[in-house]
Length: 242
Image 1 (cartoon, rainbow, N blue to C red):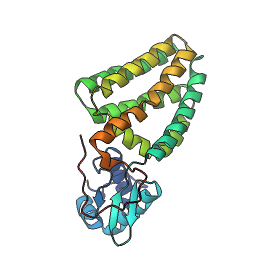
Image 2 (cartoon, helix red, strand yellow):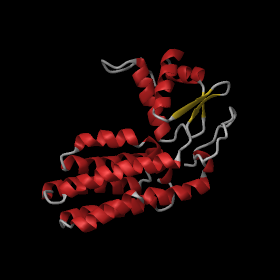
Image 3 (tube, rainbow, N blue to C red):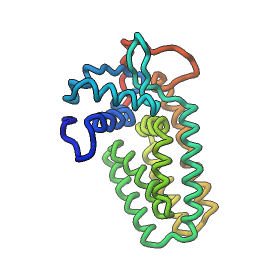
Image 4 (tube, rainbow, N blue to C red):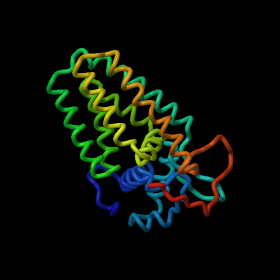
């Protein structure tokens, strides 16, 4: 990445923040992994100053932790933060759904089915990154169709830990197939105007992350906090289970 190439109105720090945030959320930079300012600056072809500023901003988002005398690390996923994020997301999406069901139009159902078709292609090609993006689009689109598209930014700001947990869960066996089927059921129930069933399906779907986290913990326990206060070690460089 050449951080010097940026759109008008953005700073080098903005570009570095966006790049590091993306790599933390998609687990390219894994939970618990060490972050070295010099290495990041060299990789991004920038000075250390925007990297240092970016890391401070990511600390404020809960994605990075700085330990004096030890170094800087990608924060591990906090299950309590995941639960809080999921609570906010569920409340907003279900409230939006209750407004959408009575007014949804056939063309809007077609829009959602188009996203499902793209998800199916992503599953068939085992493209986890594309599937995650389409999953975001599916849920954001439902809120937009209900007239609450701007509320998605509230959801987004609350779910950094949740997104990493969700992203870690996607490679688990049958997760993608299961999610496509759940999305399909939700759209079918929306098309039928069945509020009770759609509410039940969406609520259950959003809570799947808790079941999947248990599976991921068995594969990559170092991704998660477990209530202890152990500090990371500078040599700890966990590899992503992908």
